[in-house]
Length: 259
Image (cartoon, rainbow, N blue to C red):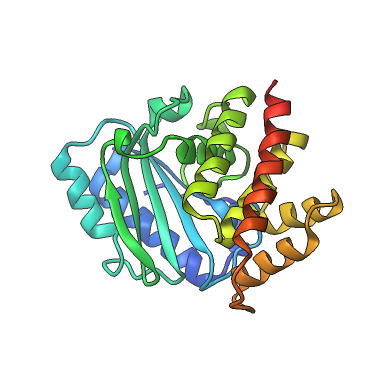
């Protein structure tokens, strides 16, 4: 098996390196030459990963569509605790190569699996069952920052997604957070990241986006509290009205950029 890991992999906690390689082993032993690449995305790739607090995000790429039996077989092998996840949980997505080289605006996945010691188990095999914005944004981040655990560099495999499409996906994400996660710290921090992308066309970690947002004059106390909740250093909940007001202001900015 040919492994050509990105040197950034060595900067991550040993537990995450070992876990990522276990995922590669399972995928390769099942898919063999049909496996094209495996990539770390999310906070592991952008920076700011907190072992035990952050999710680990992994994207696999395969050559051909899988049968339902193959999908279920792989899911059983990959899901926690079949492979023990060393952090809060793993968000794993498997795509076909054609859907990342020529980016689809649907979810376009073969498998979408969430599992872990502190993460509710969730699996879907039909992209129509999920909002596509999550996958569009994740693939865009993978193109710019994905860490190759196995296979070619991410930028050589993930095709570019148009900025207008990314801004629309950010808007869908912001509105989703208002409706479904009005008091969660991720709502505030994801909003900061979307805001920075809209203004500067740059993907950064939640931590760096939060610092940037503070420098723009955003609600310092709200962002600081969201960061503390993410780090587990406070349990004081966020003010729902302040969170929604904060996100609505960012929606206005993103809409202006989209126009």
